[in-house]
Image (cartoon, rainbow, N blue to C red; front, side):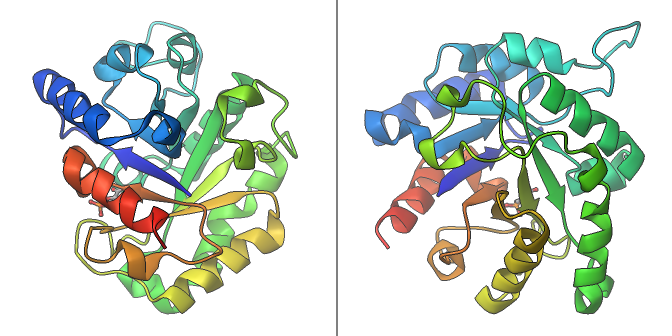
Length: 247
Ligand code: PEP
């Protein structure tokens, strides 16, 4: 299992340095491969010198250009990123990102040899027809996913993650930041649904994962967690990992 932390816009520079100082005291060297960080773009520089996997929270859908304020996937790659979050619900619903935008970004990320972590999820009103919603959010991938497995630098990935070309993060909107979580059987059904079409894909769960519920959400079929609020506290973030590791 990988534990990914999405720091969103909730981390400052000094705060990130203190986080890593504390976190490095908690994590054993051999366990560093179990974490992925998604820092705000300017904090990428800090991760250049760290042994953790990391990725960007977003990219622009072109490599280069007169695009003030945007960031290129090529820049993140040059700085050592391995992953790129795509289609997070905050990007979709606050910034109006569409599936078409996400498709373009998905292809660019793969072409630049980074792993897309594609977020999909249903709203509360869609919860009882979520299969339909999720299938629609995944349908275009068949056309845009150029690779069955990674054709690039797999030595930068944990051994279990070599035979994949993207990761899906299942993040129900009704769960993000609300304290509400799905039942394990709901989660297992979604994972089976995704793996039916994409057998080599890894599936993460994200939405209100905490020290209190991480253990109850862990199931054999799940490959990782994507954690928001609890990932900015080194003790909570590490505590979640420790609980999962011990089960
Ligand atoms: C997220 O936004 O990716 C997320 C999982 O947030 P939280 O853990 O705070 O619900």
